[in-house]
Amino acid sequence: MSYSVRAFLPAVLGLVFCIGCGSGSDYPVAAVSGTVTCDGKAVPSAWLYFEPLPGSGEGASALVGKQGFGIANEKGQFVITTYNSDDGAVIGNHKVHVMPPKSDVVPGFKCPCEFDSEKEPILVEVKKGKNLFDLTLPVKKNASQTKPLTLDEKEALQEAQQEELAAKANANAKSK
Image (tube, rainbow, N blue to C red; front, top):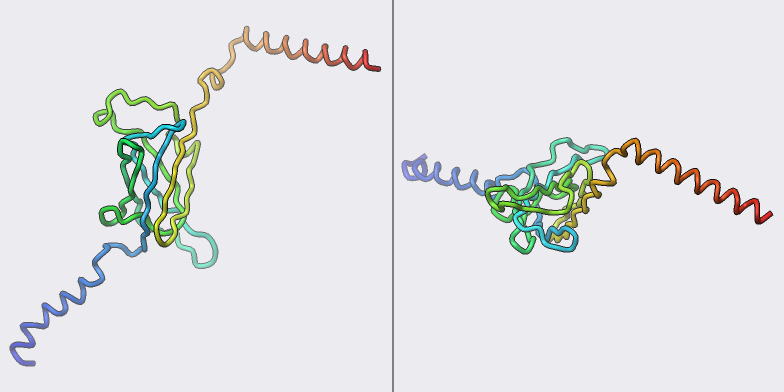
């Protein structure tokens, strides 16, 4: 090899190795954007995580790629980033986690919706091309519906049920 080729070779090899480095990903991604709302209103500053789920079927892998992330703007609009700015999410099925904004970012943030993605999972499929998701958070159940009944409330409920049964029995007897 001549001197000029040896001097040029490392530069050429470096260029060849960097050509595949563009995305920094072993997993293909697709553009993902959308809105997040609660009870018909935008959820500003919400944090969104797109967690890739393992595939199913023959040859499926538990390794499914990196999680995508985004923050909603004041209109509840978001764009997901995984490897490079606004590149989207890994192609495949995802569980979407929506988190309330940090208290130092939005002090006094209040929202009547559920942010527990284990209790109310949001599942989406990211496909090749552009993906637009309108994510609607479920409204929290009323606290009075989930708290345990007091002894007096239980007794009143039992009495009401017994009265209802007696009224139905009387109605059936009169119809015969």
